[in-house]
Image 1 (cartoon, rainbow, N blue to C red):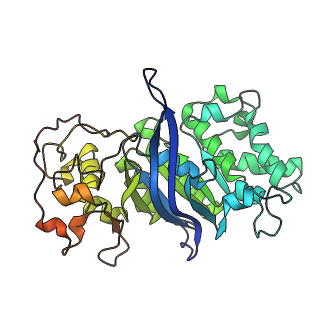
Image 2: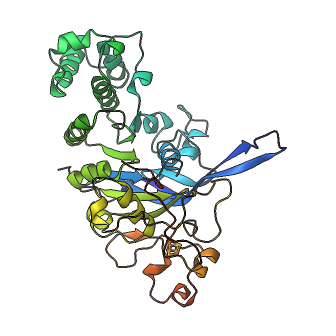
Image 3: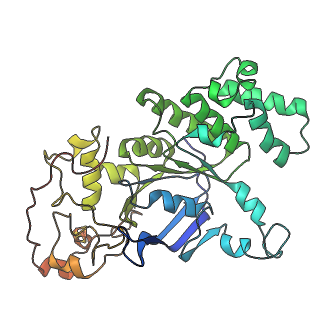
Length: 374
Ligand code: SF4
C-alpha cells in the first residue's frame, strides 16, 4: 500500500529512558521515580508505519512524544536523520539550532507532527476550518496566493469526503462531528509536509464503523504526502489493520519497555513474547488465535511503574516465568535473523532459564477482566 520504505532511519531512538518524579501520596515526605520508559531503541524509516501497543500506562504515549521532540528523554538520544534533536534545540543558532546543524530546529519541529485522540481540543474553536487549514500553508508555503490555498484546501476537504467543501470550510470546529474534526486535524498536520506524524490513539474516540475508514484515509494520504506514522494504540486489532496494509511493524510495550517488535504477521500469527500473547487474548477480534479460554497470565496485578519488578518486568504475571527471570533482564534481540526482536529468555535455547525452577504461584488466578483490551 505505502511507498517503498527508505533505507536510512528517518528517526532513531537510542537507549531512551524517561523518568518522572512524583510526589508521594498521603503526605509522605519525598518523591518517587516513575519509570515511564526504560532503555528503548527504535528506528523509524521514511514511508514507515510503526504501531506501539500496550496496556494503559505502559509508556507508549510518553515514548511517542519523545520521538517527536515534545518530551525530553532522561537518558539516551533522539536522532532526526542522524542529528540529535535535543542538541539542535539547545544551541544558539537562528532557530535555536547551533547554526552548523544540517537541519534547523524549526525544520525538525515542522517535520514531526502529532494528531491527538481528541481533535476538538487541538482545533482552535474561534477559527473557521478554512482559517485553521490556511495557517500551515501561509507559514510553510508563503509563495502560495490566497486563491491557491483555497483550491488546495477545498481539494483536500473533498478528498476526505467533506463535501461541499465550501460549506465545510466556513464552519467552526464545534459544528463538525468527531470524525470530521479528526479528518481536519489529519489534513492540517499533513499540510506541514511532515516526515512523521504521531497518531496518539487518533481513532480510539471514533465509532467502530469509522475506525477502518479513518485508517484507510491515513494510508491513502500517506502515499500522497510521503509521510510516516507512529501509531499509538491500546488495540492490537487496529494496529494489525494499519500495519498490515502499510507493510509496517507492531511494537509491544510492557511497563516502560519494548518487549517485542515485528511485522503484523509475526506479532499476530506467531507471537513469541508471553505478553504479546496476553494482548492477543485481550483483543476480542483476535482472541480465538490464542486457543485458550482463560487469560494467559499468572497474576491480575500490574506492578507500579514506581517500583518495577527485578529482572524481567513481566515475571510477576508471566505463566512461563522461572527463577532466572527474577534476576536478569532479557534484552530485545533478533533471535532468528528475520528482523523480529523479542525480549524473553525462552528465545535463547542455551540460556540458564531452562535449568532454573518455575516460579510458584497460582497460574489460573486471572479472570477474564484481568487485562485491558477491546
Ligand atoms: S524472560 Fe521469563 S518472565 Fe520474562 S517473558 Fe520470558 S519467560 Fe516470561
